[in-house]
Length: 496
Image (cartoon, rainbow, N blue to C red; front, side, top):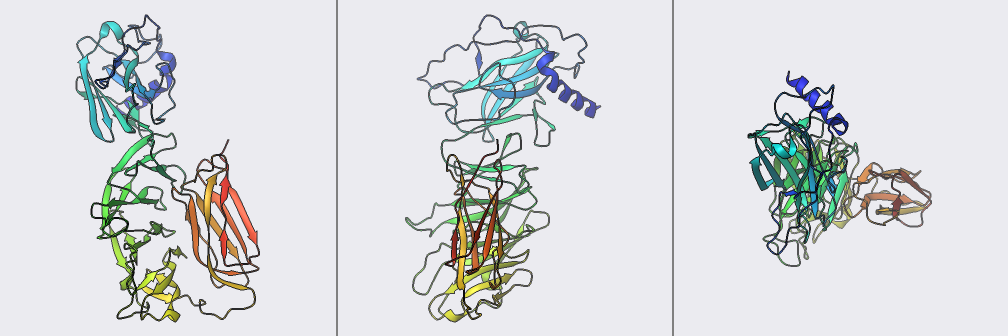
């Protein structure tokens, strides 16, 4: 019986536009669910109100009980469904929903939430003389006519006699007891599409992590202090992110930063703390996930250094199969790394996953560390060994250009704004290079990608392929090189 009720609700929602007649009557004072600031005079809102009417001939009620359903939000009272996000500075948003079988004496309650916290409550008797038993509510709004509504994720919940109503739909198109929408912030936004391009993860205002589905419906996943980095796992269901505490930071340095690493399931919205650091995580490039999503590579440390000390070390995380915890594997756990009594071995820059278990990164050392032993090292997280790249010390031949990087920015071809969440694939064809560029890199909010520790020969060919949510795919190819570096800033065009 419950499944039948849910089915009928969905059917009723889809046909509600033609099942209920809405009549334009003399403008009446509208209802607003936000109290304006003291220095603002609220002006009456002309409304299109539902009138008492009988259901259309042949219509089958979704329930014999009073019910609200099929809610959405809009900037105008007579707008059709279709928007779930509004720009910064939006001053008024209308909540619109269907109702059936309403009666005299019912008590109606509306709860508005902002970023997961109860923001405003309104409770009143059902105005049967005004609305009747069947129809569409179009005259309820929240507003701030002076500065605009605050940015954030909003949620509306409706009750009839304290019974919560099935007014919204979830990511998987199931009925839910709330309806979500968002007002975008003026401040910067960090954004990245999931590997399957079905979800869009966004950090709003630097500290709120949300996810949007393909319809743009948002959901708040986490509100922290500061979220400098986040990345998708390969299953497109889990997000890793860092929450940063700067309360102990020394001015002008990264010393004193304390980071925590978290994981969240976007479907269940369960969040788990994976690791608590006494310093910064990912100061150079954030978090790098292995192709199968089992391991995560990063750098732990402030980056501060003097003659014999550099506060940066590699750290890996092995994510558990249930995605609820992770094992931290620090650089000193690996065998094969050169050691020194008074020196430090540290990663020069970010590395790159060669496969599911091997991570290639360039190391350097301070003081008494033997510099001849430094260079590209392959870290194997399956057996905790590190070895200098087998061909890194091979003698150069004619045309060899040495070790370098492939890097650049992905930009919007019209706005020239950085494109976050773009996936850049690299193919490197060479007759002589011992380590070629391969795999993928995902841009962050700054649009930057990098393939590190690449050996160049002057006859090499490098092909870069770019995929980004909402953009046409693009390929870039370069043949022949004169130096051990390739900077390719690529503009991509939005889909029509």
